[in-house]
Length: 408
Image 1 (cartoon, rainbow, N blue to C red):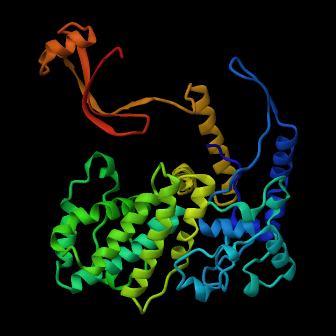
Image 2: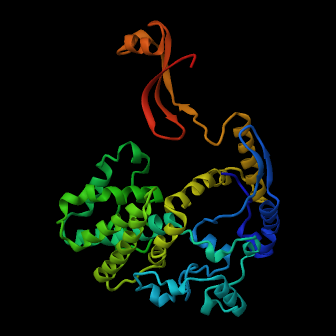
Image 3: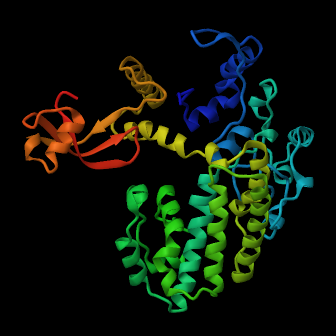
């Protein structure tokens, strides 16, 4: 993952996307037509480069592609041209309303945002063999983990508390004391209060990773307190069935068809249980997931979670560098310095580095099962070893109480 460019919202307002992406468009067309000559031990030839998909959060993609940036617009979807009133009740994808290059161009020429949902033409359409209407990868992280899941978890928990299956104190006690295991211990969800449950449309208070952890473990946390036939409990399980397939790293054609029906059943049940509410735009975006899976495969391989993690370096740096004149230039320079360090230190794209935490140096003979350890590591019993509290391999799980020879 490499940094392409950095710009501010002020740059977009002053110069426009056409000026910002002009050089990038020229470079991409050149790479597609002329390619790059590669001469290595394993491969020799010319490699052509093109754009498959542009991924990002909904607001950023809508802004770049020229679609309506407000999701209360008459046509808030970039994939289809379904009116807002229909979006609030629809449970299936209407393929007759899918946007095409011809309909997109007609809407651009009409220059009528309220009636088309399009503000302007996207400069990326000048790239050969690319058009924004074929860029249908959804933003599953923000749609599900920061949209649908936080909303529905709060309204469901509120109803279960109103039915007196448990109270807020019991819920928070279960969330706090639950054993999340090695996989999710870094994403332990926050507790709730009744004010948050009474305003489900407000901020969830959970990060995306925390919400993903909570949704998967919530049935185990409180399942013993709720009757299996409860209708609101069934809605939570229906949501979990959808998320299991949406975030699956592998999926079959049959499962995609099944997911389409699961989403429809979930939306219908939500409208039935909460008739005073309507489906949000992010509920509607879920309808396009099966079609996107048919085109691109499992959506978890195209979500923005990894890009958000990559941006975390620049986000943290922006708070400490005290640059208010040209922050983008400083951040770009620091990113290039980090890349230079990684390359010169021998780190590769598939780096398997080992990070060792704090610990102490002791004699091997003082450890439990020292004889077996000495034989396995081909060491003497009175050699010094370093006993670390934890180690991490390739940003994966923590492993505790690991002993390493000092000359490792």
